[in-house]
Length: 251
Image (cartoon, rainbow, N blue to C red; front, side, top):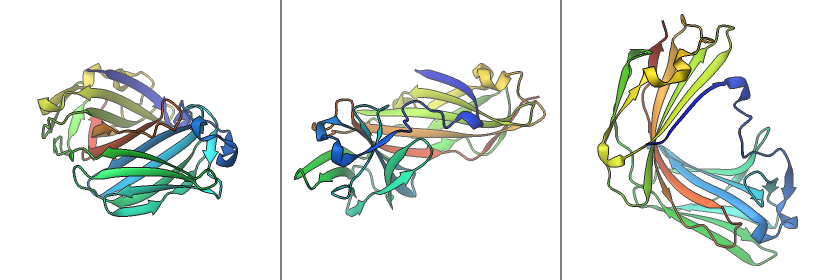
């Protein structure tokens, strides 16, 4: 299993790696220099497609599509042209779809009219995540949380667990604690040892204020990205399921 721990002030969450504040337009970028990160995430209610285009790599300039270019997503029988979404550090293209069934094909097309090219990437949606536990409850910072799900033996998929806790520092500022684990889907059960999550024992936290937390299981499948994209581009389909809110007592 792989573990990542983190205690991060919410004020710095936007400072993530792989984002660039620079931008350029697609009409001056050759097709083979476009790096793409494409993902569809379904949560049991609906699906969201997010596509990011950068120049040359994940840390290259954000690419804004020119009028002659468009990006189109097909999820099952639904077809939509994605719309640009822009924040402080990132530009991507998004669209929302109905919740797709297992094995639904997700197709992403970058259509470049001037070059008469269509770059097509595909992936099949993995099986939906059925999360049995935990349910809403209160835990102490040294407790164990048992996570149970319906195991699935599906080739070329990865199951990950994300534990996120929103806490309060001694100065009153919000702090976020994150714990990530790659799981064996066949196990159907995993125990989180809160005592081993260093962030929950940080002296900078206000021990009188409980943390509010959630657990999310994500089943991910990688697909085939068009070879005309820059090397390192990717397409993924993700099924995820979140738990009810959990309370973590720090005192």
